[in-house]
Length: 116
Length: 116
Image (tube, rainbow over all chains, first blue to last red; front, top):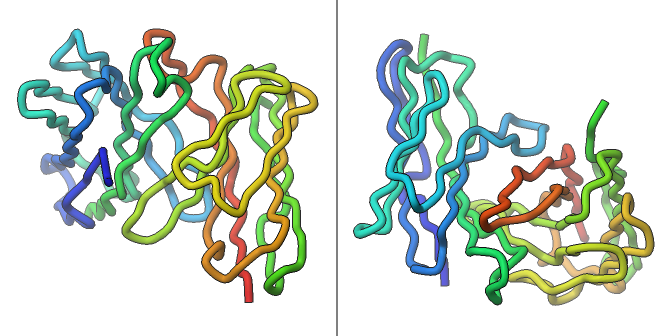
Protein backbone atom coordinates (compact mmCIF):
# COMPACT_ATOMS: atom_id res chain seq x y z
CA UNK A 1 0.00 0.00 0.00
CA UNK A 2 1.62 3.20 -1.23
CA UNK A 3 0.97 5.77 1.49
CA UNK A 4 2.72 8.57 -0.38
CA UNK A 5 2.00 8.88 -4.08
CA UNK A 6 3.42 11.00 -6.83
CA UNK A 7 1.15 10.26 -9.73
CA UNK A 8 3.14 12.09 -12.39
CA UNK A 9 6.26 10.13 -13.33
CA UNK A 10 7.62 13.05 -15.31
CA UNK A 11 7.15 16.76 -15.96
CA UNK A 12 8.61 18.92 -18.71
CA UNK A 13 8.77 22.72 -18.32
CA UNK A 14 10.29 25.62 -20.19
CA UNK A 15 13.01 27.65 -18.50
CA UNK A 16 11.55 30.63 -16.63
CA UNK A 17 8.13 29.05 -16.21
CA UNK A 18 6.63 27.56 -13.08
CA UNK A 19 7.10 23.89 -12.23
CA UNK A 20 4.44 22.29 -10.05
CA UNK A 21 5.10 18.87 -8.61
CA UNK A 22 2.31 17.11 -6.76
CA UNK A 23 2.14 14.56 -3.99
CA UNK A 24 -0.78 12.84 -2.26
CA UNK A 25 -0.77 10.89 0.97
CA UNK A 26 -3.23 8.58 2.67
CA UNK A 27 -1.97 8.28 6.25
CA UNK A 28 -3.61 10.93 8.43
CA UNK A 29 -0.88 10.43 11.06
CA UNK A 30 1.70 12.08 8.82
CA UNK A 31 2.51 15.50 10.17
CA UNK A 32 5.79 16.47 8.55
CA UNK A 33 6.49 16.56 4.85
CA UNK A 34 9.69 16.98 2.91
CA UNK A 35 10.91 17.28 -0.63
CA UNK A 36 14.20 15.81 -1.77
CA UNK A 37 15.98 16.34 -5.06
CA UNK A 38 18.13 13.71 -6.72
CA UNK A 39 20.62 14.12 -9.55
CA UNK A 40 21.92 11.08 -11.47
CA UNK A 41 24.72 9.18 -9.71
CA UNK A 42 24.14 11.12 -6.49
CA UNK A 43 22.13 10.55 -3.35
CA UNK A 44 18.98 12.58 -2.67
CA UNK A 45 19.47 15.95 -1.03
CA UNK A 46 17.02 17.80 1.15
CA UNK A 47 15.19 20.66 -0.54
CA UNK A 48 12.38 22.00 1.63
CA UNK A 49 9.98 20.83 4.32
CA UNK A 50 6.69 21.78 5.93
CA UNK A 51 5.02 20.97 9.20
CA UNK A 52 1.33 20.15 9.32
CA UNK A 53 0.69 23.25 11.41
CA UNK A 54 1.49 25.34 8.34
CA UNK A 55 0.00 25.46 4.89
CA UNK A 56 2.90 27.11 3.10
CA UNK A 57 6.66 27.32 3.36
CA UNK A 58 8.98 29.28 1.09
CA UNK A 59 12.68 29.10 0.46
CA UNK A 60 13.84 31.26 -2.41
CA UNK A 61 12.44 29.89 -5.67
CA UNK A 62 10.88 26.92 -3.91
CA UNK A 63 7.51 26.92 -2.17
CA UNK A 64 5.72 23.96 -0.68
CA UNK A 65 1.96 24.05 -0.14
CA UNK A 66 0.08 21.68 2.14
CA UNK A 67 -3.66 21.00 1.94
CA UNK A 68 -4.39 18.75 4.91
CA UNK A 69 -8.06 18.26 4.17
CA UNK A 70 -7.19 16.95 0.71
CA UNK A 71 -4.06 15.15 1.96
CA UNK A 72 -2.15 16.84 -0.81
CA UNK A 73 1.06 18.79 -1.06
CA UNK A 74 2.76 20.48 -3.95
CA UNK A 75 6.14 21.94 -4.72
CA UNK A 76 6.31 25.09 -6.82
CA UNK A 77 9.54 26.17 -8.47
CA UNK A 78 9.50 29.70 -9.84
CA UNK A 79 11.24 30.48 -12.11
CA UNK A 80 12.40 27.06 -13.25
CA UNK A 81 16.01 26.71 -14.35
CA UNK A 82 17.76 23.96 -16.35
CA UNK A 83 19.78 23.10 -13.24
CA UNK A 84 16.52 22.14 -11.54
CA UNK A 85 16.26 19.11 -13.83
CA UNK A 86 16.32 16.15 -11.45
CA UNK A 87 14.13 13.56 -9.78
CA UNK A 88 12.00 15.01 -6.99
CA UNK A 89 10.77 12.84 -4.14
CA UNK A 90 8.19 13.86 -1.59
CA UNK A 91 8.35 12.20 1.81
CA UNK A 92 6.27 12.12 4.96
CA UNK A 93 6.78 11.23 8.59
CA UNK A 94 4.65 10.87 11.71
CA UNK A 95 5.26 12.54 15.04
CA UNK A 96 7.81 11.24 17.49
CA UNK A 97 6.52 8.73 19.98
CA UNK A 98 4.13 7.00 17.65
CA UNK A 99 4.67 3.59 16.15
CA UNK A 100 5.84 5.24 12.96
CA UNK A 101 8.63 7.13 14.70
CA UNK A 102 11.84 6.84 12.78
CA UNK A 103 10.18 6.06 9.47
CA UNK A 104 10.23 8.36 6.52
CA UNK A 105 7.92 7.26 3.71
CA UNK A 106 8.81 8.37 0.20
CA UNK A 107 6.79 8.72 -2.97
CA UNK A 108 7.78 7.21 -6.31
CA UNK A 109 9.47 10.35 -7.56
CA UNK A 110 8.82 12.75 -10.45
CA UNK A 111 11.43 13.41 -13.13
CA UNK A 112 11.52 17.15 -13.84
CA UNK A 113 13.09 18.34 -17.07
CA UNK A 114 13.55 22.07 -17.57
CA UNK A 115 14.28 23.00 -21.18
CA UNK A 116 16.39 26.07 -22.00
CA UNK B 1 33.53 17.53 5.12
CA UNK B 2 30.25 16.21 6.54
CA UNK B 3 29.24 13.14 4.58
CA UNK B 4 27.75 9.69 4.42
CA UNK B 5 30.10 7.25 2.71
CA UNK B 6 28.90 4.02 1.12
CA UNK B 7 31.04 1.31 -0.41
CA UNK B 8 31.16 -0.07 -2.96
CA UNK B 9 29.48 2.16 -5.58
CA UNK B 10 28.87 -0.78 -7.90
CA UNK B 11 28.61 -4.46 -7.09
CA UNK B 12 27.82 -7.45 -9.27
CA UNK B 13 27.38 -10.76 -7.53
CA UNK B 14 25.72 -14.14 -7.94
CA UNK B 15 22.73 -15.62 -6.19
CA UNK B 16 23.51 -16.89 -2.71
CA UNK B 17 26.92 -15.28 -2.23
CA UNK B 18 26.89 -13.27 1.00
CA UNK B 19 27.78 -9.61 0.69
CA UNK B 20 28.06 -6.51 2.85
CA UNK B 21 27.57 -2.90 1.84
CA UNK B 22 29.28 -0.56 4.24
CA UNK B 23 28.00 2.82 5.40
CA UNK B 24 29.78 5.35 7.54
CA UNK B 25 28.90 8.89 8.63
CA UNK B 26 31.12 11.52 10.23
CA UNK B 27 28.42 13.82 11.62
CA UNK B 28 27.87 12.06 14.95
CA UNK B 29 24.28 11.34 13.91
CA UNK B 30 22.08 9.17 16.11
CA UNK B 31 19.84 7.94 13.33
CA UNK B 32 20.84 5.86 10.31
CA UNK B 33 18.76 4.11 7.72
CA UNK B 34 18.93 2.04 4.54
CA UNK B 35 16.72 2.54 1.50
CA UNK B 36 16.38 0.87 -1.85
CA UNK B 37 15.28 2.69 -4.98
CA UNK B 38 13.40 0.82 -7.68
CA UNK B 39 11.68 2.19 -10.81
CA UNK B 40 8.08 3.14 -10.12
CA UNK B 41 8.43 2.40 -6.41
CA UNK B 42 10.55 5.28 -5.22
CA UNK B 43 12.63 4.95 -2.08
CA UNK B 44 11.60 2.22 0.33
CA UNK B 45 13.04 1.87 3.79
CA UNK B 46 14.77 -1.42 4.60
CA UNK B 47 16.01 -0.97 8.17
CA UNK B 48 16.73 1.93 10.44
CA UNK B 49 18.60 2.51 13.66
CA UNK B 50 17.74 5.08 16.30
CA UNK B 51 21.04 4.60 18.14
CA UNK B 52 23.83 2.14 18.80
CA UNK B 53 22.51 -1.40 19.26
CA UNK B 54 18.95 -0.26 18.41
CA UNK B 55 17.64 -1.30 15.01
CA UNK B 56 14.17 -1.81 13.59
CA UNK B 57 12.55 -3.00 10.40
CA UNK B 58 11.40 -0.63 7.72
CA UNK B 59 8.94 -1.45 4.97
CA UNK B 60 10.97 -4.07 3.07
CA UNK B 61 13.32 -5.85 5.52
CA UNK B 62 13.06 -9.39 4.12
CA UNK B 63 16.40 -10.78 3.00
CA UNK B 64 18.48 -8.10 4.74
CA UNK B 65 20.33 -7.78 8.02
CA UNK B 66 21.90 -4.79 9.70
CA UNK B 67 24.00 -4.10 12.75
CA UNK B 68 24.86 -0.92 14.67
CA UNK B 69 27.82 -1.71 16.89
CA UNK B 70 29.17 1.83 16.78
CA UNK B 71 27.51 5.15 16.09
CA UNK B 72 29.26 5.95 12.82
CA UNK B 73 28.79 2.63 10.98
CA UNK B 74 25.66 0.88 9.76
CA UNK B 75 26.45 -1.99 7.35
CA UNK B 76 23.79 -3.70 5.25
CA UNK B 77 24.19 -7.46 4.97
CA UNK B 78 22.65 -9.73 2.36
CA UNK B 79 23.19 -13.26 3.63
CA UNK B 80 21.90 -14.97 0.49
CA UNK B 81 21.26 -12.42 -2.24
CA UNK B 82 18.60 -13.10 -4.85
CA UNK B 83 17.91 -11.40 -8.20
CA UNK B 84 14.95 -9.46 -6.75
CA UNK B 85 17.44 -7.62 -4.55
CA UNK B 86 18.99 -6.05 -7.62
CA UNK B 87 18.48 -2.37 -6.85
CA UNK B 88 20.05 0.98 -6.05
CA UNK B 89 20.73 1.23 -2.33
CA UNK B 90 21.14 4.36 -0.25
CA UNK B 91 22.33 4.82 3.27
CA UNK B 92 21.20 7.91 5.15
CA UNK B 93 21.77 9.53 8.51
CA UNK B 94 20.19 12.26 10.60
CA UNK B 95 20.51 13.85 14.00
CA UNK B 96 16.87 12.99 14.63
CA UNK B 97 14.42 11.37 12.23
CA UNK B 98 10.87 12.45 11.55
CA UNK B 99 8.44 14.14 13.84
CA UNK B 100 8.69 17.48 15.60
CA UNK B 101 12.45 17.33 15.67
CA UNK B 102 12.58 16.47 12.05
CA UNK B 103 16.09 16.90 10.87
CA UNK B 104 16.79 16.34 7.25
CA UNK B 105 18.35 13.10 6.12
CA UNK B 106 21.82 13.11 4.61
CA UNK B 107 22.22 10.44 1.95
CA UNK B 108 25.21 8.58 0.64
CA UNK B 109 25.91 8.45 -3.10
CA UNK B 110 24.35 5.02 -3.52
CA UNK B 111 25.38 1.45 -4.27
CA UNK B 112 24.13 -0.15 -7.47
CA UNK B 113 23.79 -3.87 -6.79
CA UNK B 114 23.18 -6.48 -9.47
CA UNK B 115 22.47 -10.07 -8.40
CA UNK B 116 22.78 -12.56 -11.25
